[in-house]
Image (cartoon, rainbow, N blue to C red; front, side, top):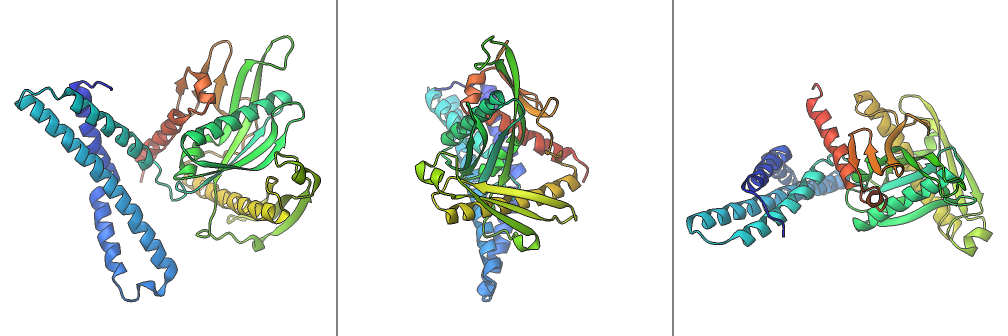
Length: 378
């Protein structure tokens, strides 16, 4: 059991109050009342889409209010135990520390979730990894990143599905795409988009020299029926090929792999070509359906980036996979350190990071985003 000082206990109580202010709990309660009044209208279900949207909004707001009320009640229990221990001179240290430990865990979770306030943060994520120049070295590094994200998702109890996989000729991967499904999957993983750099003694170099490898990660939200993306506004090329992934003999012998190439204009008039492919399903129809969802998701992400650029809140992530463009460095030689260059978050246990322990980087990125929003001019 963790032991707490008086200052640490006081800090937990202060965090509860601060969280209530940031979440604007009173404002959320007023919003619930307002939406419930609209719900009472006899014509409420005349517009089913609007009605469902309101129902979902009420449910989300109620979840936040109930979650904050839960930590508020736990904080009050903690204060009561402290008063009893002081007034009655009772030995309640174990009870106080146990209550404080649970409160801290719930606060950590809610504080992180409160950072995920973009409407798309709740969506599932599609994550694609591509190696940079460097052949086997970079392909092996891309495969290490794939394992890292799959291990992270496993710890979060998210569902992971491989939708496209191209193995390297000697080791590693030429590319891979996975979907990560679960609460706030995109909100957590959006911080991972960018170039990742690895420095290590190469296991493929007979002279045991140090090598630097790069791989790019691209994360975007998976669209669903609530988002309309009209593929007919552009032209689409439908291609099939033999799958070379992990699908077994069937997909390797039959042309089940599907690639969709869409050419069209974004909302700013920019001409783009966007590609999506799926190789892991057993039938061509299944692969086409999955590829179409991925294609819509990538078009939607391209439009998201346009909006973000207008607000000047994010940098253009279409950088070359080379020196100077990396978001994070993983150094395994001569010392071990993982450094996120955007937040300057550093972790010396590189093995743990590569085993999926990337939450400190995610949280630092989200916190920095909040600080930037809070300090930017209105």
